Amino acid sequence: MNYLQLLQLALPEAIVVITALAVLTVGLTRERADDLATGIGVIGLVAAAVAIGRLPDSAFLFGGMLVVTPLTALFKLICLALALFTVVLARGSGFTRHAAEFVGIILLATVGLMVLVGTEELLMIFIGLELTGLSLYVMTAFDRASRSSAEAGVKYFLFGSVSSAFTLFGLSLVYGMCGTTGLNAIGQKIGAGPIEPLLAAGIVMTLVGLAFKIAAAPFHLWAPEAYTGAPVPSAAFIASGSKVASFVVLGKILLVGFAPAEGSAEWHRVAAGWAPLIAALAALSIIIGNLAALAQTNVRRLLAYSAVAHAGYTLLGLLAGGREGFGATLFYTTTYAFTLLGAFGVVAFVRRETGGDDFAHFKRLRRHSPLLAGCMAVFMLSLAGLPPLAGFFGKFYLFAAALSAGENQGLLWLVALAFFGSLLSLYYYLLVLKVIFVDDAASTESTYAPAGFDPLQRITVAVLAAVVLGLGVLPSALLGRIAAALP
Image (cartoon, rainbow, N blue to C red; front, top):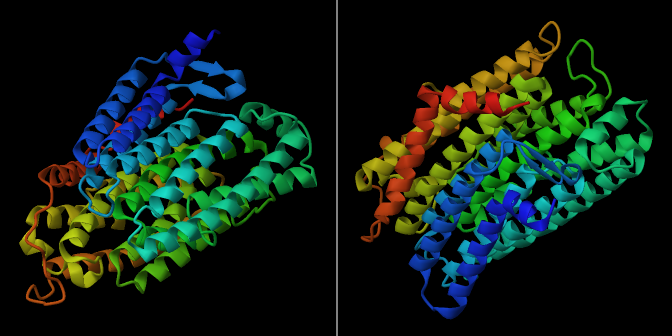
């Protein structure tokens, strides 16, 4: 294969990189380039999506360093869509004078997500994680006028550095014991004989590093700080795009590379492997995330702790395994990403108008913007898992896949815990809606500024709400594509 053919297969990533460089150039040559940078970013992301549609159905290069399949194409499109919505929501946010540079960092983070989704090789996975991570650290600390933004960026960077060290050391042990970095080859090596202690240590350390990326308890301590201190568009992208790519790559590592070392987390026949570890992470995430969210009075912090609980729910699909379990995980993490991105869009509006995002700042949202109040209701009810919204069907598929896995409903204990956590979450999500629709609108704690939200951003939030509602009414529109794309 020559370099021209390689460039054709990597054309979507190349387009996003070129777009990021163009946006950064605009930022260097013009003082106020918000609209131009946003326009260039949107055009580049749309062009990359078109390039994905022109890729071949299948390609497997350099031992899995670059993989083209219907599944990778679908999730690259999803990552591009999340980035596009984030770029639009970041327009005119006012937290920085360097809007073009901020859009450029979003685009570079998107390249990292696309690399993660489109590879089945450990070194490329690590490169994708670091490219995404470094971009997100900068995005978190981008508000130079905010002390909390700088503090959140430093904490995120320190936690991320430690997790990267765990991941890299674990991957080095896996490579040392297996002699390869391709996931398919690693799976064959692990299945060929007993698991050595060093290999087991490598698997555990790799999973610890990846648990940080998905904010699973007890490796979640960075999430409340990052979600609360970062600029709202940064928090939105951390909560949505990075979660989608992280669960895609975690599923590949567990179900392809480490599949022979699965063990069992079923209550009546627990066996050593990564399954009991993932089950423990899921259980802790559901318990800690929901209990901590109950005590919050800030919407962004509430969303951060609820994200920990949702990471626990999503891990159920990976424990179930197979096409059904992995498909349920991918469906749930995608619908959750669009839901949370929309919720952060509403938070951005409230914060811009009132200067804060505590519960009290949402009291007059219904009168000031009925459209955004209605959209927030859609997002909160979907996160709570109520029909006919996407969150309900996402949880339904996850729970059904977990119950049908194994023998004698061995994962029933974890499904019961997840169901109990969903009931708890209903309280604090409805509490947000109570503040918006029921509490005294005459409260002086929340005074809206006369400036309005950008009409394009209102439309973006409304589109995200329509996506959440549409995937609830017609879940097969996405689930069918995921099922068809899975091998």
